[in-house]
Image 1: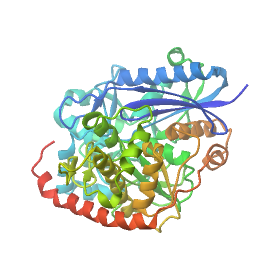
Image 2: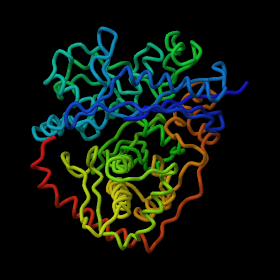
Image 3: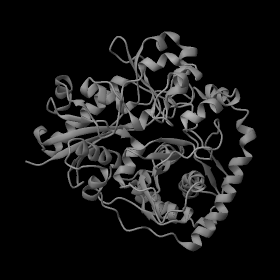
Image 4: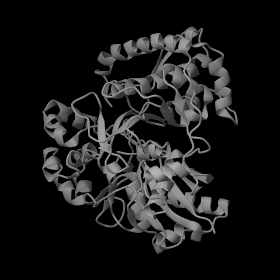
Amino acid sequence: MGQYAIGLDNGGTVTKAALFDMKGHEICVASRKTQVLVPRPGYNERDMEVVWEANCACVREVLEKSGVGPSEIIGIAVCGHGKGLYLWGEDEAPVINGISSTDNRAWKIVEDWYRDGTFDAAYPKLCQQLLACQQAALLKWLKENDRAVYDRIKWVFSVKDYIRFRLTGEAYSEATDISGSGLMNVRDGKYDKELLELLGIGEVYEKIAPLKYSSDMCGTITREAAKKTGLLPGTPVAGGMFDIDSCAIAMAVTDPEQLCTITGTWSINEFISTIPITGTQIAMNSFYAIPGYYLLEECSATSAGNLDWVIKNCLDIHCLDMYEELQVLVDSVRPEESDVYYLPFLYGSNAHPLAKAGFVGMSNYHTKAHMIRAVYEGVAYSHRMHIEKLLSVRDAPKVIRMGGGAVNSPLWVQMFADVLGYPIETVCGVSELGSLGCAMAASVAVRIYSDYEEAAVHMVCINEPIMPDIKRHAIYNVKYQRYRTIVDALDTVWDQFTV
C-alpha cells in the first residue's frame, strides 16, 4: 500500500486538489472554478458554500481518477489566498459571502488610518503595511457599514482556515495567514487586544480562533466531511498555510539567501529572514511556514491574472495550447520594436490605491501581438518594482525561483530573466506548487519527514536555471524606466477616481 497526501489550494477564482506521493510526484489534479460575485465596483465576493462544495468535489475527483484508496491518504492540508475575509456565524453558518483578496471596498478605511496616525501607532506591533483587502480593514468596514453582520460573527477566518474548519469541525487560525491580516501583533507573536482597539475593532479579539502552525495537527476528517470528500473519517488534517508560503515551501525556499517570485492573480515576491525588517520600503513581515523565520513580502494584485482577462475580453485567441499561440505572437515583435506599455492594474495596483489598468502608446499601427507583448512585459515590470524594494534591504540573490501561471510559458520565464537580470529557476514536474507545499505540510505533520527541509530534499526537484540575455536586459532597462515614468505621471489622474 502506498503513502499519499492531498493538497488543497484555494485561489481567488479556482479551487484545486492535487495528490502527491512522498517523493513529490504529482499523481493527479482536479480543479473547479468558483464564480466571483461583483455586486458593486471594487467588491469581489464568493459564495462560501459554493467554495466548500468545490473543495469536496476536487478531493473526490482526485481519489476517483487516481485509483488511490482513501486508506492510503496519510494526511491532507489546505492553502489559500491570504487576506480577504470568510466569516462563520453564531448560527453555525456563513454570515455573508466570502470576500476575496482583490476586494477594495475598504480603501478609505486604510487611507484614514494612514492620515490620522493610526498606522504609525500600530506599525511597531504590526510590522507591515495596512491594506484594504486585509481582515482588519474589512472588519472595520463591516462595523461601520453593516453592524448587524458584524455582531453575528463567531469566527474570523481566512479562506483556508474556513475550509479546514469545515473538514474537521475545529476552529484555528494558522500563523502564516493570521500574521498577515492586520489582526496580530507580529513583533511579539501573539494576539493583542490593545492593537485591535487601536484599529477600532476590539470586539474581534474574542472571535479570532486559537493559533496553530502550518505543520501542526489541526484535527481529523469528520464523518460529514468524509461523506462529501470520499476520505476516511479520522484522516489527519495539518494546519496548512497562506498560498505564498506554500509555493515557497514547494520551491524549497528554506534559506534566507534565496528569493522567489510567484505569478498568479497576485504578484508575490519574497524571501525569509530570522528577524522582521521594519522601517523600510518592505510592505509585509509575516510568519513563515518554517518556525523561526519571518516572510518578507512585496505584493500586489498585478500579475499573470491580467493575461487571462485580456485574452477573454479583448482578443480573439482560441487554441488548445494557449501559451504556444501567445508565444508565436509575442515572438513576432522584438522588445526594442514595441513601444506599447500595459499597466497591469485590473485587480489592484502597486502604484496608487485607485489606479486602473490600461494600454499606453497604442495607435492603429499596433496589433494584438503588440498588446500581448505589452501585457507580458507589464507584469514583469510590476514584479521588478517589488523585487527592487526587497533588494533595498538585502544582498542580491544568485538566482530567483519562480512559480505560478507564467512558468507555463518558457518565453515568459525568459522574459522575467531578461527584465530582472537574474537567472530564473523553476520546479520540475509539478504544475500545482501550492498543493505540493500542502502535501509537504501533511507529511511533516504525520512525521514521515521531520521538518520542511527534509521534506524538500525528498519531494522537490529544481530545473536548470534560465539565464538572462545581457543585450535584452539592457533594452528592458530602458523600457522599464519608461514604464515607471508612465506609472508615476498618472498619480494625479487616479486621485480624481473613486472605487
